[in-house]
Length: 134
Image (cartoon, rainbow, N blue to C red; front, side, top):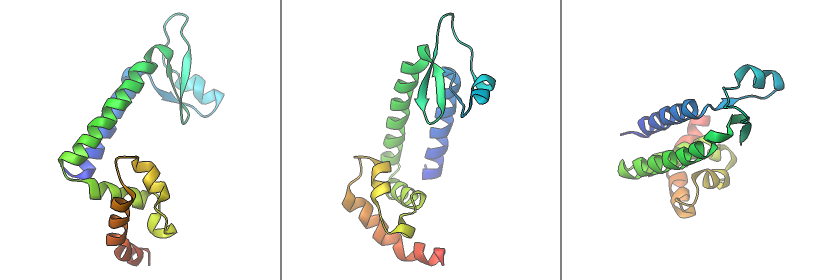
């Protein structure tokens, strides 16, 4: 399984989780009123961050689902030997080759990855990435 396929599976799982938990996103009162999902009698919405909301009764299910999804993602990365590909993806995503810093990448990857491991992938791909930037 490639990194792209693993990411697609994670996105599918996340979308299903959002649907199950009634997650919606809103960045204004108008969007909130347009996008809100049904509530049980007397229930309230809770913020999940980044403009997301869900019914309070679904918040624990959502957080547990996130934990399971992230574990499955990490397990798939390891099982399919995609650690270097995942590091490269995050280096590119956080513009490390442009800024020359891997700090944002390290933060995004979390404690499962070492600075030495990220630096090794950075050094391996730096010249090619700088060429592509022209």
